[in-house]
Image 1 (cartoon, rainbow, N blue to C red):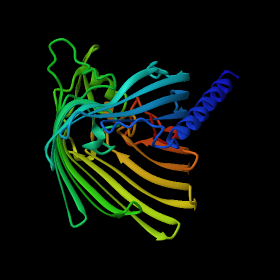
Image 2: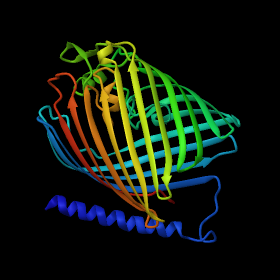
Image 3: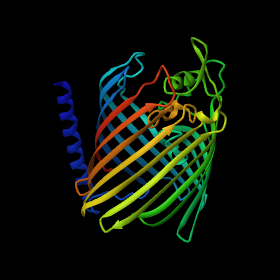
Length: 377
């Protein structure tokens, strides 16, 4: 009864806010204050998750408010802040008590971007790692970092090359280091290319190199529960069995086959060159279709197969997307109502353990989500 009341309250709140946001979008230009320097938008989302394995289970309701705010100080300097307020409630049960509902404020990005030249950009601050890496290596998270980006466009092909040095941290921007432990690091380089004829027809690819250094004991301990190979030095100290350095790559194509049907397919790959070959690789292959049911209604279906070996990536930093030492599949559907400004979706994930591990068992996750589109503040 309490869960039903919470769902009803959150759903009412989201739809009310979404209606207000759409009303804001439809304001005439004369009613909206003109400020080209400052731009901000926001969205609301409500998700219900049912996750269980042989040792634990969780039923959670997750309510989030995401904000994107940008302020142009001058033609060369841009401030970019993307906070998120997360309220989570529900019931969790696990053997080690590690899983629990969390309510917190986190940053997906808080950075300054400086562009002294048209094709050169320097960025510093808490930088979202989605820009540099595939989902197999790092989940959607911000690290304190500095980045140099060079880009150019010719003959319809956009190319960019980025170099970054970062301090890998948790969502609270904590490095998780103890006394006398050195500061961890993540150095990487990424090359991206995209050819686009229209939003419905494009091809893109990326390739990158990464090096982790000085990963702390606390990260090793948590990663051990998520699939990585770790040595226990003492009850309070743990160490990764292997270093993490290697390659990552991704590719995706999208093409309209009929007037109202688009097909898309893609793949992601990662390899850690510092571990055993059978423990070193991860991949994700997906294919899907987008159906335009009406002018303002769109239905998306996507299926994927993934396989991530135990030491392909640091599990602590990608557990929100793909744990290591797992192989499985997912099915993702979404129905978008563009005129009304929201979408609803359903996702199912079934993952099995690749190598026997006392801390991991087969896991099934069902996610139901309602999300508004970004609306201008």
